[in-house]
Image (tube, rainbow, N blue to C red; front, side):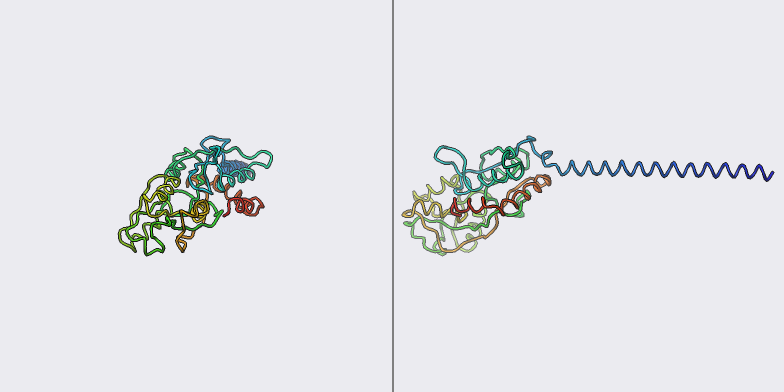
Length: 280
C-alpha cells in the first residue's frame, strides 16, 4: 500500500513540475511578445510621417503679406525669413543634398490654425507667437518679437496718448489685435479694424483711411524704411514675445521633429545669415 502511495505521490510531483515549467515558458514567451509589440508601437508613434496628411511631404500654411517674414517678391514667388527658415529646417529633417519635401500653401493668417487642425496643412509658419487661447501646439521659439505702432507722419499722432479716437488696423487673431484691444481699454474711441491684409493696411494708412497699423517690429520698420516720408513708428514696443512654428496638438512626433530641426537651425550660420539678409 505504501508502495502504491509512493508511486502516486511521485506521479503528482512530476505532473506539478511539468505544469510549472510550462507556465514559466509561456510567461516568458508572452512577455517577449508584449515587449516587441510595445517597442513596435513606440516606433510607430515616433514616426512623424504617420501624422502627415500627405506622407512624404510637409505642407506649410503661410500668410505671405508680412514682409520681411513672408511675402511675395517681384516675380510673384513667396520669400522671406520664415520661408527660407523652413527650407533650412527641411535639410535637417532630410539631408543637405536631399531636403525633406515641402509644400507652401498660402492662406489668410486667421485661417492657418483651423487648417492645421483639420489637416489641410501639417504646420503653420507665419510669425506665430504663443497664446494659450490658440488651439494648437507651439514649437521652441526661433525668433524674438515685439509689436510696434506705425502711423502716417501727417495725421498728427506723435505719441500713444494721441491714439484716442483712432482707427487702428491689425490682422484678425494676431498679437497686434490684442495690443489694440488693450489700448482701447486705456483710451476712449479706439476702434480695431481689418481693412484687409497688411499690404492693404499700409496702403490704407498712406491714404489716410485709418490712423495706425500694429504689427511686428521687423514688419513695421520695413515699411518705414521703404517709405520714410510717409510712415513713422511711435516710441515704445508692445507685447514682447517669441515666434514659433505651430502644429495640431495631436501631432506630437511631428512637433518633436520640428523642434530638433529648430535647435540645429538656431546653432547654424544660416540663421544669422538670414537675420542679416532680412535686417531683423
